[in-house]
Image 1 (cartoon, one colour):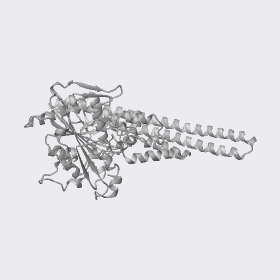
Image 2: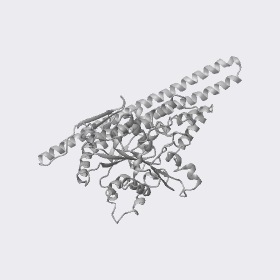
Image 3: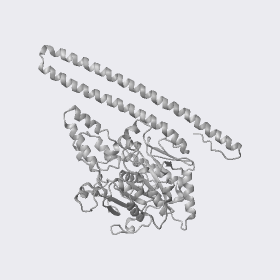
Image 4: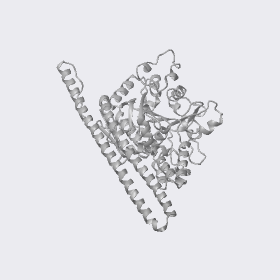
Length: 533
């Protein structure tokens, strides 16, 4: 199920991030949905699996990367899709104990050594920005769990998540990151490698509206341009910073911004030692139906999902491909049939007719886990001054200073008031922008009316008409300015109120934990841990 926060991040996530709105989703790894990774606990879990292994082989880790306007809950399978798929009479205990049934939990059930992690991120940011951050966060994780536990990483990516994975691997290669050498498999589910026709159509409509010399159409065009950077990257599947920077140098309202692909052909390097698999869906159950060739899975064409391009230098060659007729785009991340194919590739890999010989793919550079640098307290990997990642020994993975507390109750408590402040700030900005837009439209339309009046009035009356026009514009400007000031004052007052409530509840929460600890100590029992944040 898609949450309102994930939709907001997908549509205007770049704006939320730029304004430091509390609704902006920070990138983080989760052990289970809504449960951020605790490095020390994860390391202990992996060490237990390592001890129970009969052979000393790297432990498999699967990272599930969701797509646009989604989060980790989007992977949940519909109950009807697995109730009749039970194997050997075993029950789905995870379905009755509140654990989300998805590709990650099913892989852990079918492969006891498997550890599934989930990525949550702001899908409205540039894919290249998220790619850098994903590379950083995986590097920090690998440095924390090694050299105690060697691992093999599999990335399972839906839609935009596949572009994010490709971006992360490219930046990892540039910075010689350790995690990329531990990656063995990347699986794409409906990923628009060559772009999405819906974003191309959206840009075409935006350009067309921009060319119509009317205030209303140009206003609609400006509103359409507010869609996030992440959505605009889907036009041609931009994964690197240089892909979109060249396009931004020109005007976004020109036809060339719609028709020209600024990606440099052949600049992306697929990893020789990694197996790439592509899963595609179709809108119709008949594989040969004409609509399948035209619409693909409903959002991504079949050629784009398979990495094929008519332009030389853009085609991507994958190890294997599998089409699922009748399974649309969003269903690719929650289908039992798709999971069975994933399990075949991951748990019981085998060479299919379309898959290359593993010996032809080469092997990764040797990674000596005993020589991987590791700081027992804090690891920092910095790509530039703005993007910094920390991974503490006993805390959560942290990005850009946004700390996720160890106690989930504290996370939920802080999250409630942060969301309230974020909603208030967003409404405040929306009202301000809306008032400015209405003022702009009204002023332009009025000016056009007064200009037309000057053409039909005698010349001696023209100064009077222009004077009335100026007075009218002044009155309109003062009214809208008053509305803006009232909106600002109201918004700031509400945010201060939420901040006060946050402080009061924080004090109450800490006192209750402290009193619980004292009572536990006096009773001879260990009380709740007192954590100072």
